[in-house]
Length: 91
Image (cartoon, rainbow, N blue to C red):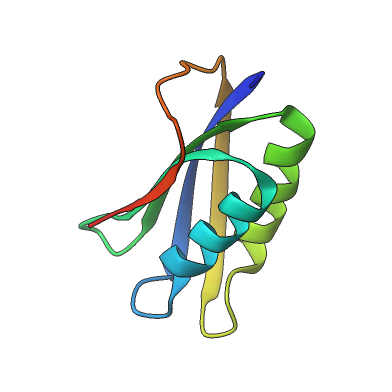
């Protein structure tokens, strides 16, 4: 793991299987971290992996599942903490 990312997704992203979509893509790409619905109706993601793979993941987050309407995706990159063993959905 050489990079971490905090991703914030705004739009119609709750109730449209966005977390499931994110979980499936993260697992397929070998990314570790988590995705969660936030109280303000947005989705938050914290993840770690190889920079090129994380960038690919962010591109997928901008697309989202078919029922989502993505308005904005912000990604802040940093150093990985190594605290994640897998990717999970927070409830």
